[in-house]
Length: 224
Image (tube, rainbow, N blue to C red):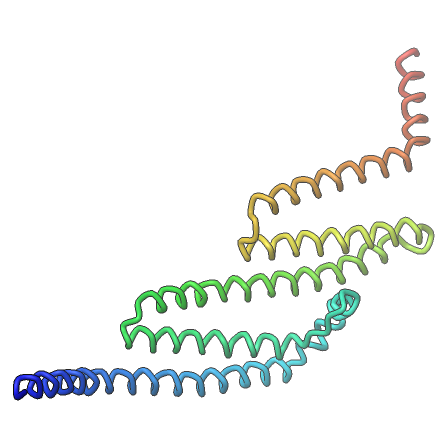
């Protein structure tokens, strides 16, 4: 009977010592995560405030990005979105630090993969924003360059320029996100070929009379 009691007491003592040894680790990981959570929220709000102060959403609205998103059924405030992304980035960073303190290597490795992917999302978003801005600017430049005498041709060229830049920007963003790289490369090749064919047809159909006159003139000069 005494042996049973001793074995039971030893088991409880071992369990308590293990828990007592691990308790500071748990508390340390919890403190790191809670402090990191607070810092992440503060940084997210700070970034959002800075972007709203410089009126980023209004600038992007002028580029036509807002209209494009509304046509797609989405209304996104970019300043809030970037602030939210920053907040969760740092939450994952401090969560990864906490799991590393606890010795959960598998969880830490997974979180490291997630954290490493977030910059790709940020870069992809920047690519889309810059492409939308460039598309809006180039559309106005091409339309203005065409002049009033070629309004229809100018409008077509401006629209073609705008959507070409937007599509290239979208493909570049998907490539940055590593979404089916082989498929993206095929789509880019096909899109470039489509533009080349469309440009060739447009030039050929639009300038066929001038081309005919040039060939007739060249024949006359050769015959003389």
